[in-house]
Length: 223
Image 1 (cartoon, one colour):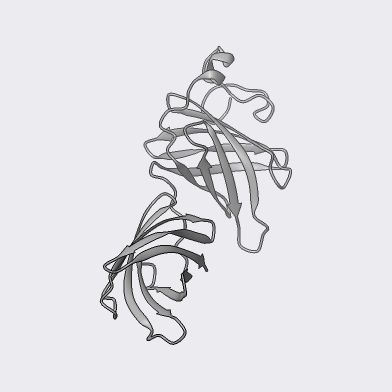
Image 2 (cartoon, rainbow, N blue to C red):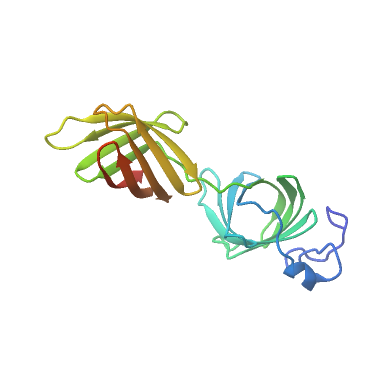
């Protein structure tokens, strides 16, 4: 008998199924799987990001001093029971996970080609928001800006320069919805307050902006 009270012979090659019809189980639609999972497996921390509304997740684990690991996760659920196949692991260590969902938490065990153990996860039902970083290097036409984050807040102190022009400073407030970002520029030293809208892709961002006077396109590098 396994941790959940139902028998199986080999949890890696034959995922445990809490009822008789395995084909029905595999064809069930995932329910309330959220947008991304924050996972803990011993010293490893993982982020599993869902592909649209499917039951497939792209996973990445990190551990201090170790090479990050990536894999593709296929999640199947029935009531509170979850069975997860980890395949295409960058370290070659594919696994099978089982667990129980309780609210936005999941706990269980896994068995891998090499090793196994316990795991837990928090299900996040809002889109995973990109990291805002510490500093943005921004290009707006002939103007170049440096936006510096205040601690871990969504407020940045910004300064723009252009050859032959007086530097401009302002305070920026960012709000995110998934990869989309909206930035309000206020207290501008030139009196020209603005609104920026754009999208973050990895460590780059780009979009358009409108101001009291003028507007245009912008790009940024995030570090």
